[in-house]
Image (tube, rainbow, N blue to C red; front, side, top):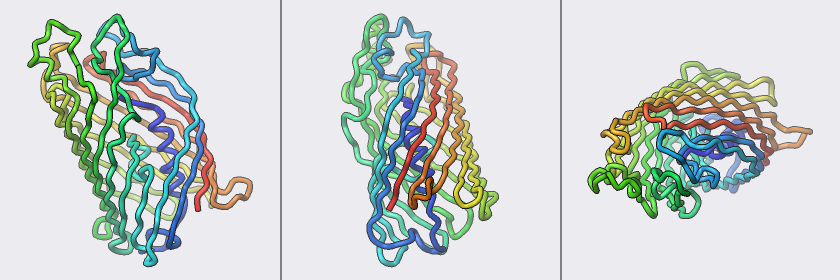
Length: 336
């Protein structure tokens, strides 16, 4: 399920975590404990059949892409880390630093270690936490309210930044998903049991990403990326191959202003034909995120104000799977 709050809250966190500059060969400025606390307020809207808001529980038919849902929320973010005395190794717990603006929201625990002047290896584990995310038991129910069920996932990610002290960064991520009551297609009596099994959304996901900083100086950095995602779901109509291209730019204006822009496009082609719609699903997703950060407002050290805006849209040859998200937020952060 797409959720605009995932992108807004974590996008703010990524920018805030990137404020401090550290010496070459060091992972942080000081040894010992560190904490980052942020409070954000945001407004977002979404349109997706898989948004489990109560206003989206009833769909009249399988030709629509869901109701438009609007909401305002307040959301905190926390990250705790511990850096060893050599300033090269750090253990952390909290939301992920990397790939956040790119749509990943996860609580994780891990370790990062500097291998050279710029080269860093990071490994993190995201545990399965039940009760935080919901999806529909059977998303294809029409005319009456769909029932919610818990959705959870766990996974690992590996990041090799500035590999061999070059501008290349490589990432690998693995996740497995679980749905408490996976009943996709049970309401469609015309489907056979073998056809319903093609709709099973549980499974494993693998993503490999390469990034290369084509331009970098004291104020500006430009980084394109390529990634491949394989969704090996139990139902092959839900599994897919995904190919993504992206471009991230970061720019500093003086000592207190930071901006960033991130664009990405992904094409996904599913593994087999969907028996509900009698065709193989193909999706094209485009997203853009912009952020502005102001450091040390009112002269307060170790604080930041961040403004973020995000829009993403996924079009599909099957209307039922089309998704649109948009949102803006503002946040205040403090770190020690």
